Length: 71
Image (cartoon, rainbow, N blue to C red; front, side, top):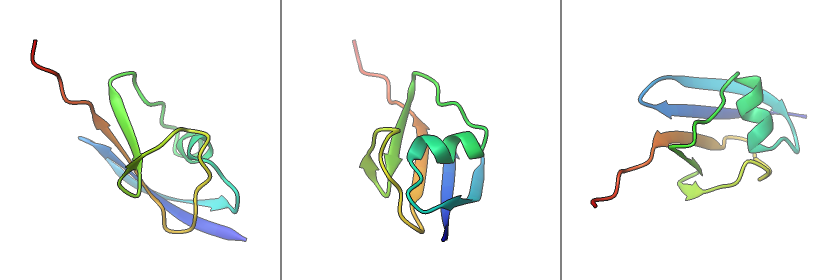
């Protein structure tokens, strides 16, 4: 079965992709041709997530630049 996932890159683009059930965050990023940088935070449905996390239909992945801490 196919599921749809939205990927938001801040600042940047919004993509919606179709994946097979059981796909992971890494699968979604690869399908969208996105490689996160080391200074981006990754969340799924508003919660911090690892790239090996399994997605569900309608999931929203957000990649945003991490806030800089004050020194």
